[in-house]
Length: 225
Ligand SMILES: O=C1C[C@@](O)(C(=O)O)C[C@@H](O)[C@@H]1O
Image (cartoon, rainbow, N blue to C red; front, top):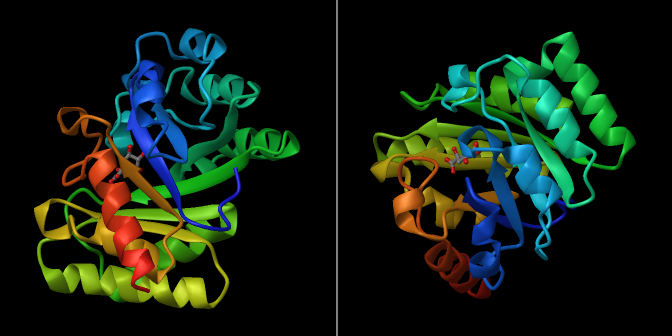
């Protein structure tokens, strides 16, 4: 998957969502950890959108236990439709995570290295440290923080703009109500990935817009850029 420009992902636990996502999304983020039989679903996938496969660990806000988690992601990366995988920063710090990342790259599958803070927005310095490491390991370094104020969002956007200006690929978003607008605005500052559910009831993180709304907002803002 090419992250040269912004990629809007329909984030979902069911690949059956793909036809409904096609008009507005550039890709599907398949949350394997939220799906019943993810490998089987991937093997029988015949949609048009490329897939970013995520198998989010319990310790990073997902539902996958560590048993077989990275092996399943490795399996997923072997399938043609899967053009990118997401690995937590704490996963790529392990040998196994490095192996999965290297195997994906050998098959031309991109690696998004992600970090999440479900409590707060880290200090400007800490936030840069995390983004730096994630961007160094991944084709894209992703950071999702939790915003409690507009100021939190500004801190995130300032870092996004800085990294982008230096030619480092990052994706950023602020979770929570106070951060919601970051999802529409961050692409203007260089964020390369956005996430949205087709149906707002199926949100995969707090504060997400539904897919059609986020596409519309991003498009409107870009056309004014
Ligand atoms: O890491 C991310 C970002 C996210 O948490 C968000 O805030 O939109 C949604 C997740 O599905 C995805 O894996």
